[in-house]
Length: 426
Image (cartoon, rainbow, N blue to C red; front, top):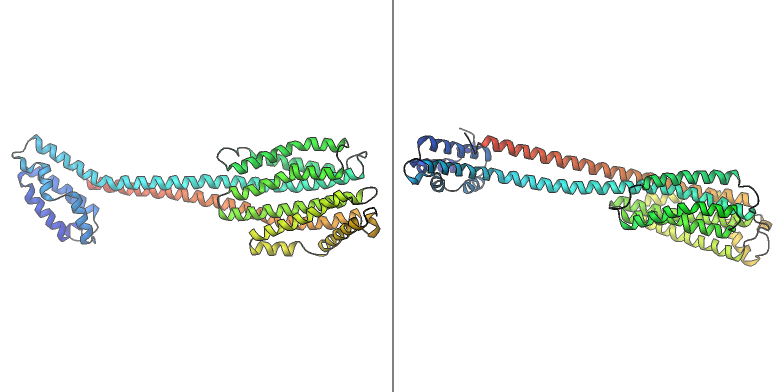
């Protein structure tokens, strides 16, 4: 048996001692037991096993004298007792082989359980990310509907709803349907903060019917409409976006969702500014009353604060994207027009805003360009969030499959080794 573990000097000495110790057994029993032990050592030890490894394996088996005693060598003439002892010896060998098998199975089960938990968490993150993307679209459509509704109220409720407002409502309803579908099943097992924020958003969507009815019945002035849309519905969408940032477990998703939520709030502030000044320029007379001026100024302050929050959480590439995208002549003109309107409303509140060259059409066009540019950035973050969530779920799936397959292969190898060791029968 050259080139095997049985050639090791410790193994040869052990088997030689075993031969002498088994002298009291019938020859067939002694030969069978020695062959089983030799087969086990040959399978358990590689040809290059070191002295320490061999000594440890032999120690686990026990001394030759002990094995012979258990096998009944010291019991005198052969009979039932030696047979029972040999069976006990076979079970002992089986236990020695079974220990690594059970250990591998336990460790494999723990690893699979851990990967299964990660897979489930990645699935929850993916669903929240996809829902957040749908909420971003809904928020945009709500902003457009809010602005058009405010302008409609400022011009007087008697006239029919404009085609643009009707189209905006249709787009909002479609986006709301997508959000409701994506929200199905999000409840138990998800972070409570996200679940609570989602409930508030769904309640706000339900309120849209009442809000629209109030517009048609002249129940709300333009300024109140803006507050209702912003607080009851759009604000609820912003709250959910912020909750997603704290609900997902993946760090990259957290960063992207947090940046997206901050920029979406800034976009909403831009929309409020567009709605307030558009309503003022569309009114008769076109003046910005003190109450609406306060709303406009607060929206400007909130936008700056939310952009600061965006820059603190966004990567350098995302910050650069915003700086280069939300820029240009129209953005600058919108900013200048807003400053002019604020100054005139503060110093000459009764003078029509149009006297200094401001008009609803130009303001709406320039400020809409600013908002559209911001939406380009949120759109990039949207895509990034969705892609990151899909990648994380894909990695979790692969890891779970790998752990299961690796554990199965290891168990098969150990089982084959146990069979080849022949601990129970020749």
